[in-house]
Length: 362
Image 1 (cartoon, helix red, strand yellow):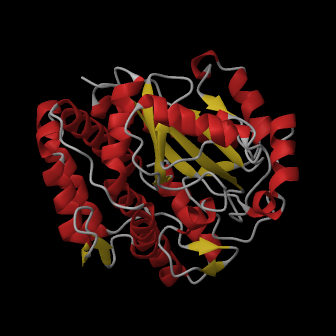
Image 2: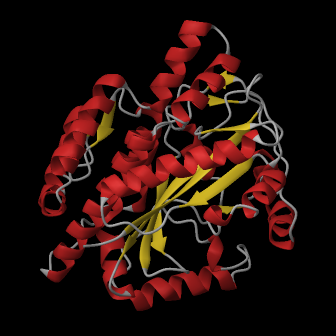
């Protein structure tokens, strides 16, 4: 059974005002004193962010428990220095992010200018094990049109600099400012994939392979495919769902590769449209169907995803739980919808942040 690991980026905020706090170095120093947190928490591009990494898990219930535990540990360490964490993919309140010290991050700020100075966004990255780079590239080629559905399910960033963007995942639109971000063409082989990456690094526009920000890529560090399209999810259960569906997509794509089924040959232009539609609508309106690339209701597109990967989900015992969680999201709303409901109920964005703090640690 394929193992799955999750990286989540959390926003450090003042527990009373909801304002982002540039305290990641202090939180990381606290966590470093705790033997149980060794290797779990890491610094990120901005001082207002804290990242954690789960262990590879085969059982999705275990993964869900670890995400909950890591979020609570992050909140505990943050609380010791007077802040807390919120699973928000953008800050609802205005923020001027500060870049973490280090030569790599300083190079990025110099190279990309205002894009780095403004781009405080927080995502959820899912790693799924693969047997080889060849299998991994076969997977990358076949999961491309399904990734916008994952983005829609995870949508959790409706606000930007104190304003409603009218998007459900505005994080994903901001992320497109990176020159290497977005969907990719069909590679066809590991050799072609690695050749493309080498050419991109050789261009000098990006610093190294770590700045290959494809929607899905081969991991540099692990024998995994890394899917990078999701917002950090408001609820741990949604993050576990994203991981479950991603594993189902990887397994289904690998089986298609073994059986010689070619990938859908959608252009990058169409995939960008599907990603935009998912960011705009989340689950509140229509999405582009991954096969036809025509508009259908979000419910029907989510149902198509579950049907597409149903065999893989059934084999791991995840099908019913995935269905139930998708139904709850379709009825109860994504993180973006919860944020807008909090604003409608309370009338100010501070209450949105503090309300989301409670959801993060639930």
